[in-house]
Image 1 (tube, rainbow, N blue to C red):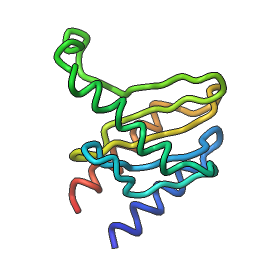
Image 2: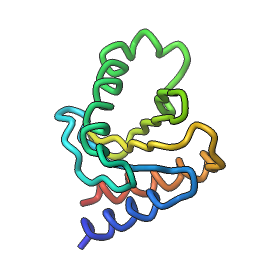
Image 3: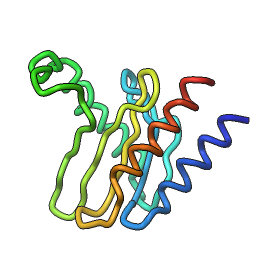
Image 4: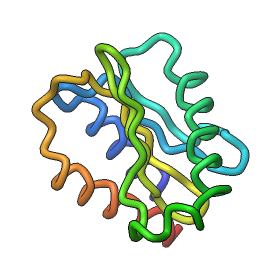
Length: 121
């Protein structure tokens, strides 16, 4: 029951203006738990984003002087990829247009809500 609800939440977020795809990915394995969006290569793309996450995790102590991580962002020419922690050993990947009108504060709140649901299943 919760799995269908979580998938529906991710599907809904993927339909947001400026977003081209979303996924919840296991950080240790790179396995995509659920992905939704308009990109043909969404799953392999989101699987590969775990490399950035793991790189940060390996070097985390170097960055601790700046405080806890909010998110990682990879800015490309026309698109951006944002990675947020989302539950135990999971991350939420957002693929979006670089120029967008996403309310990132609200977006982060939605990811936190999803994280609580994932942790309680």
